[in-house]
Amino acid sequence: MQETERASKKYMGLDTWPDVDVLSAFWDGQMSAVAAVRPALPQIAAAVPPVVERLREGDSRMIYAGAGSSGLLAMQDGMELTPTFGWPLARLEFLMAGGDAARLTPQGVSEDDVASARKDAAEIGLRPHDVVIVVAASGTTPYTLEVARLAKQAGALVVSIANNPNVPLLEIADYPILLETGPEVVAGSTRLGAGTAQKAVLGMLSSTVMTRLGHVVDGLMVSVVADNEKLHERAARIVAQIAGCDPSLAADALKQVDGHVKPAVLVAAGRSPAEAQALLTKTGGDLRAAMNRSQSSSR
Image (tube, rainbow, N blue to C red; front, side, top):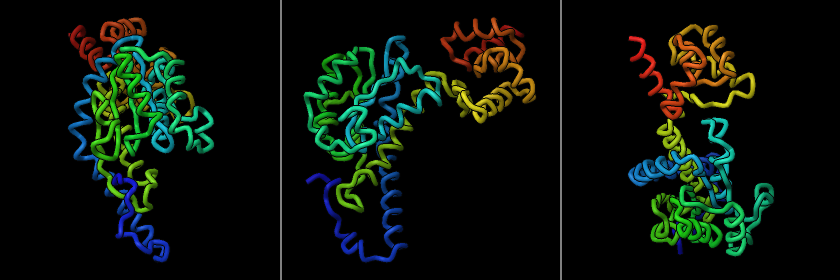
């Protein structure tokens, strides 16, 4: 029996405990799950450079695949890449057992549907430049395993996340990430501990990758998509902080470049919109490199 399915004697009689003790047990489980991420840091770090290298290719895509709770967590991480880091929607795909219906209604039987995995993968056309992140607490989910196999056959880079050791999903991946979260407080409910660890790693991995791709400077989201009032204000604060200028100047710089943070930083530092865009083009959109070039040419 897999560790994520095993019932722990520690929680015998859980349903008879006082509420505060039940909550304490769940809290302990969550903390243990987060702690399980630290031993996996070298595995996560090993995946970053090759993922970044693939994603520097203009036609490469981030593809997330999974089923059930793991699939939903993977999908959530991917959906946040565009508003947070400006990652193009055209370079983002999701393969979820049960399709769109699984987002709102449990589709347990679809986890075993290998034919569906083949169909879904064929529809998006897996390519060698793609990065495919597959997630399954068990590490044995047929749908997710089939996607991983097909991705490998297509030459894509496969990163897998699982919560049990010595499982097929880890063995098939180019970069396996094992999160040994152990038995759940509620046996088999991997939406709890295993899910918490998966959520942490998905966010850590994608955020580090996006940082290396130049979407983060000084811990700030320089590719943020400002499509509401709160984000417009955030964008102005980001420009002001990086450029070291007055908020009103930052707001004016943003207006000159249609609300894009990266060129706005350069405009606020004295460049024209055209010069700012030229610098960013030369550096492949790397704001840090563009700022360094701008400073060098100003001396």
